[in-house]
Amino acid sequence: MQNRLARIFSPSSGRTVMLAIDHGYFQGPTTGLERVDVNILPLLPYTNALMLTRGILRAIVPSSFNSGVVLRASGGPSILKELSNEQLAVDIEDAARLNVSALAVQVYIGGEFETQTVNNMTRLVDAGLRYGIPILGVTAVGKAMVRDAKYFRLACRICAELGVQFVKTYYVAEGFETVTASCPVPIVMAGGKKLPELEALTMAYRAVSEGAAGVDMGRNIFQADAPTAMIQAVGKVVHELMKPQQAFELYETLKYEKKGVLAS
Image (tube, rainbow, N blue to C red; front, side, top):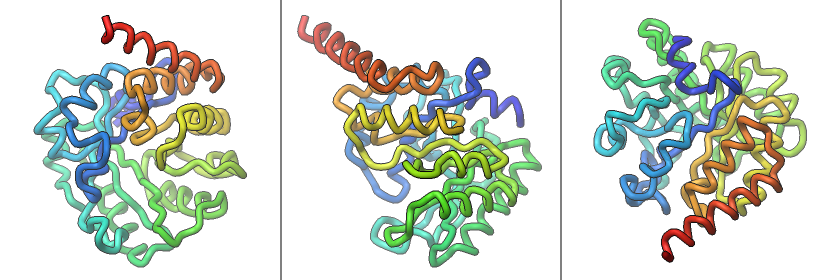
C-alpha cells in the first residue's frame, strides 16, 4: 500500500498534484474533456497522479503512463438525478488488474443518501485492505449543503475514522487549517469550479500552506487558457511553495512561449 501511495505523493515534497478528469462519470463530456486524447494527454508529464474512470483509463491513457492512477470507484446518478444516490461502480479485482494506485469514493455527509455512501466507503476500505489498495474519501457537497470549516471538519474526520488512507475536500478561506489539523490522514484540496488563474494559484498556495498534502485540480487546469502552463505553475506552488504572483508570472511566460512557438 505504501508503494502505491508513493506513486501519488512526491517522495521529495511529500505532496501531490493530481489532475482530476473523472467529471464525465456523472456530467458527460464536460467542457475541456470532450477529447481527452487531445486535451489531457499532453498534461500527463506534469502530474503526480491522474484521477479518472476505468473507461477513460482503458480507452485513452497509454500503458506507458507510470505516475499515479486514482480510479473513480463510485457512481450511478447523473446530473439529472439526486447525486448522493451513488453505489460502488468498480470491482476491486478489476482495480487490481488495472494496477491502480488508489480508489476514490464519494461520500455525502448530510446528504439524502448519507448512510449509503458511507457504507460504500467502508466496503471499499475493507476490499482495499485485502488487496493493498489505498482508498480516497471524497467529501461531496450537494447543491443545498453548507460549505464551511465546521462541515468539512465533520466530513473529513468521519472518512478518516472509518479507514480511508487520504481525503479530498474543498478549501475554505476561514478555518481550513482546522480541517487539516483535525484529520489524521492527508488531505488533498479539490479544485472546484473554474477560477481566474491567479485566484486558483492563490487557493492552492493557501491550502498547502495551511496543511493540505496537495491538490486535485480539474477545471482550473484543463479549462485554463493554457492548460500545460497552468499545471506547471500549480506544480511549482504545491511542491516548492512558490508564491502565487510568481507562479502566475511563470504561467504567463509559459503561455506566451507556447504561443510564440505555434506562431513560428
